[in-house]
Length: 310
Image (cartoon, rainbow, N blue to C red; front, side, top):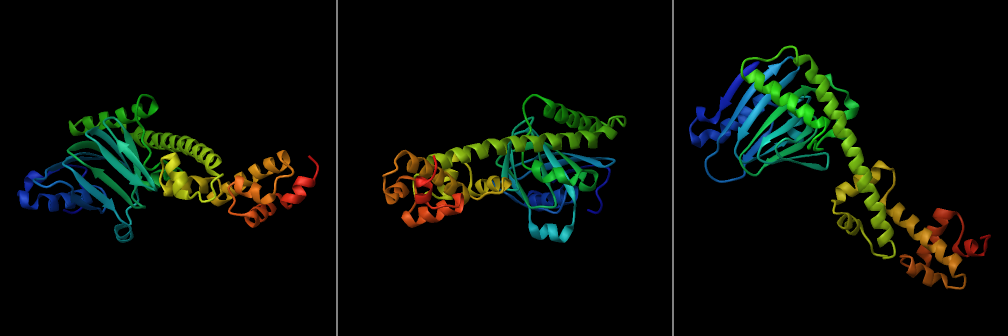
């Protein structure tokens, strides 16, 4: 279909139903970036896009049936399209998956995704959303990775941003693009990006505290695993490791330090208790494991610690 025009409307009604989804796949690649897509329900498929380009900001109102859309590594390698996109859900529900996070979208909510890394958009039923697309070069690179697949919803400053873009798109579709507002669009887009990054940081801090609490509860079990800790926190293994990497520590480090902390308390409280019993009580696999971990953490043996000054 060639270069994307400044204003265009496309619909699968332009083709017969047998070719509707193939046509739709071409539409979304031309309107946004190179994508792989498939329907997720049997039967007829319908979709439409109302697209407006306003300087650096592109606005597309997408109305379509259930589907899954993927931006894959191979497509990224071939196309070199560097955009940050945000979906503002208008009707129905959807998911954005990127960077190990999943953003569930409902009417009024917004989330970002980056065309330079793989992502997935999933819609289980008919939906409508506004997609805002801005070149990466117009935005601070440092903020992007922290803000992808983080939901902005509910009352507050995020709602002001979504209302602005929804209103701007409506004016543009009606033939009144409100040129005085367009220069503010990139600034508000960047502002919402900062809100998403701050929201993610707060979420990660809460998850990190939950992980530390779960480790403290589970450290007495010698066979505790990453799966056990992730399940206790209701998160995935990937999220567990990402959150811990953010503080530069591993699960093994945290378990070891917690077990040594417990061992120190027991050694001082019960000075005549055999070291093997201390090891078993504090989650170590055996006396040798306790000795090794104790030296790594404290620099002395359990015996030297117990006989040292209180």
